[in-house]
Image 1 (cartoon, rainbow, N blue to C red):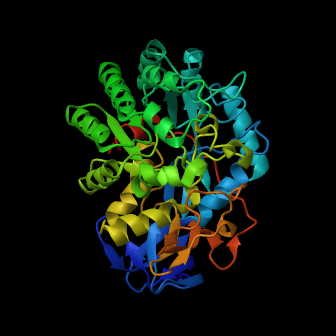
Image 2 (cartoon, rainbow, N blue to C red; image 1 turned 180 degrees about the vertical axis):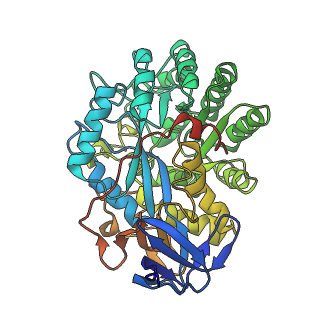
Length: 470
């Protein structure tokens, strides 16, 4: 007689978010992988987790975070950043290439980033972006082969962090880079704001004794986003480069991107929680912590983004977690232009979207899971290993209590610097447990554990990536 097959873990009695429905089933896990999903699993398990009353979802995948290593000292790094993600129900992330010294624009720089991640310890799995800058066209193929999952470029200035920092591309470098990236069947993500418009409009505020949040919004109007989006979509059509538009702030831009998609352009679009929960009036009230680019826009834009989500025109949601030391958010009342532009929010993304999307607006949980997990996994080659709850996938799982109201306190945050635009906000849901490849990495009772077993996910082979388009 064969020995009984024993599971490592059994999650029992939860409301499980499957790709097409929410169903009360059990999940059996063996060797870090989902082995069974069915009602009332009878196989014995080394550990059983009672999920009654909880929502069981695929772990979120945050495709847009800035963990500022190597070389930036007191900034957010891999250890604290990944701990915050684990506490927020995120089981994989993709780290952006720009906020490091050196930025990830060569294979040597990529290896320095990997060394920094290994030295710090990472709590959940991760992949890396490579950068496209004016000086590294000859490095793109080697970076692609070395394992970056995608590339990132700026059409406007990313800010000057000193010699060797990440630079925006002009149209020639952008077009030529897209041709190379297309040959490697990789995706190029673009920060789409017109530098020409921003520079021209910012000039009228130069020399003023005081430059406000409202001035900053005026210097980066919707027209700057729309102009850049139209231009890079044309480049994508001509080069056949897979394109991803990051942190889109307006429904008008989404509509332009959707039309291009219908016309055959291989393009996806993300937006961010701060564009979905705040308005420009909130940004002025919140001050330095709410500064970002593109800026937070009006109530019409916020509600329009939710409407586009309901229509399926936005592919996924990412945090654009871009923290900095508190000193770089100082003196905002005197010069809003001079402070660091970036929002700390990665720990709150899933809870925010559960509250605002599902509980407030009735967004179905399978749709929310696609936005937070499956769509980024598919776009950047983490699928079919990650992105949904299904047999054979990594056991990357989050348990959410849908009725756990609280006011977010700074003490809950696991960032290196406990500042966030969401502190003081009322939340209705709470992540109770996060599991990465079958290992519990966070519980609400005990916090994040000492084990830092996050693995680097290299880009998948070209043949596999070709097909899983959204």
